Length: 534
Image (cartoon, rainbow, N blue to C red):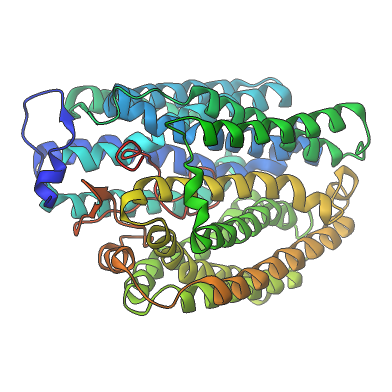
């Protein structure tokens, strides 16, 4: 089946022809999707900068701040795969609109939260909106634009999303320093209103007819979310010294048993959210393990670094936000180029070098402490982290797609994306505990710095292991998925979108950066072809 024929496999609810890039209709569709996904991206990167101010405002410790981040990531990771399936079943525009409105309502609740407990609950609510919004954004572009315009449209979408991520720390720092941390959430409201109005008027409705009659794996989604919640609750609450308390032990055991139940459910159901047979490929398992290690280490660092800069090094919220910008800019600039190179050489070498460079960036963060100099201490580490991730991201997505095979490209990328989010979720809970960072050390600069140094050395060691694992397990040779990814990388070197019956579109496509705040996600945000790959 050719690309044009594959494009017609999506059922269109209206009779309008496919949209061309550069047309008035195309600009409206891009505006709606960029505003929707950009809202989530900007919010995710801005919140980390505001954490110290939020902690002082509510007079809470490190555990509560971890939950401000993890409550959002928990529901996003738990329901992301389901969000993509819902969009295929009930319409991409419909679920995108629901996600935008849901995310805006969550933002409003976050902005007016009278206590840390309410803020955490509102963040969990907001994460569900992001899980509905994010898959639909890219799916709308793929289904609405003509095949020859799709690559340009997705490139524009991804690039503008990268801009939102880049300005997130800067905007968040300025709002916190000059006005109020609550505006980080309130700023989403007018953006959501415009996105919803444009989408309702100008975005055509599409569905995937191949999955509409299949049962949704609602029990699987529920088991995944509840299992993750139990494990993360246990680890986060252990932060305060209550490792052996009844609540922590019960939550941890219940979470692990529920996750085991999720695995059993996925093995038995005819239409699982996560087809377990994918993990029978050693390379697929290894690439996802590398994803778990690298993205977990990065998430922990991006949680702790703003705290260290503000609470120990004396930076303002604005200064901490500006300090992180070089990392995002380097990834935006280099990821696509590395992706094209990896498409010719294969993923093994860059997947080895990238984690090693990232490890060097973590080790350079040992220089960051009380009264740290930005030029001498912070910038070299942040720039090195950006370079390492730029070298890693695109080859990693290529390796996942190649290992999963063309028939499973869509679900392979979705699984890899969720692995990255779960890694960040667990790392924010586990790494501070492993490094000895407690509520006490959070309020004492010298103790916080000591724990921060332990955490970044630990993260760097994990990345060294990830580099060695890549060298030992990732094949040198390129496959069709590698070549397609190299040919069609956009701003962050994302993989191409799968079209039709096992074909990869030359137009390709890519994903934007991570709405959860990590900065970049590895593969796709969607499961639009799940049924075809069953």
